[in-house]
Image 1 (cartoon, rainbow, N blue to C red):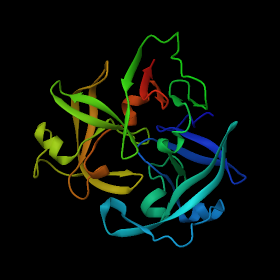
Image 2: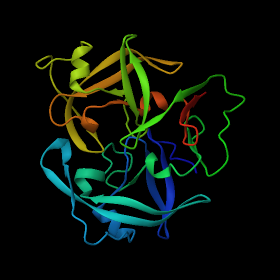
Image 3: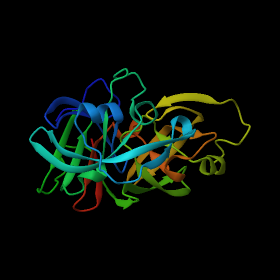
Image 4: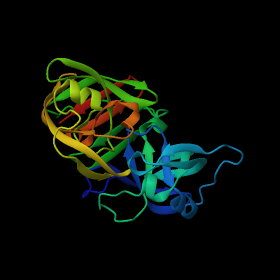
Length: 275
């Protein structure tokens, strides 16, 4: 399956319940399958009757919105068939309208990597704009690659997590977020400890993302090491108010990852980075 070349995040086209050409965002920073009310209706995705709604924060963390459990009975991506995917259906504007202008107001489905852990591996080859789903076969790194790194991978709250070192001394776990169009996203406490931000420092900046508008502060992390890979001059961001992303986790975003072929080796708990 080939993601859309013009986009900065991995997007594939799938057939959902017989509806062809549905854009699906491959987002490892989400531990669920997510879609909006309108899209669920268009794709004939049924809600699960009798279950209580799931409360969540709205755009920018303001207010509360309700999402509902549903089941995606069948999704075809190329020759790969996925079925009985448990999903959350939420308000279009608050949760799922992709706001960066890639598709205007077109709805996209978000498919978390966690939903594919029954596979052997998932490979996102950014330079070649290809996605590979490995059902049973072992993953073998590209023999022609000039750089191959195997990073130990674990799952925390059903999110892919690796160990990292910031600025050569600050050790932390990092959620691998293929759906995030940034380098790093740091919680306020970490940004403060590393000297990047304090309450009252500088003005606030507004950004638009998958959760709508939010206020934050941007800066540059000079060095981030993950396994044997060192990223330098990494653009980073922190929210200046409101709820922290994922409860205050450090996120490694797509800005650095899209330089590589990124493979989630579910079978052996390894994140492969190659180029």
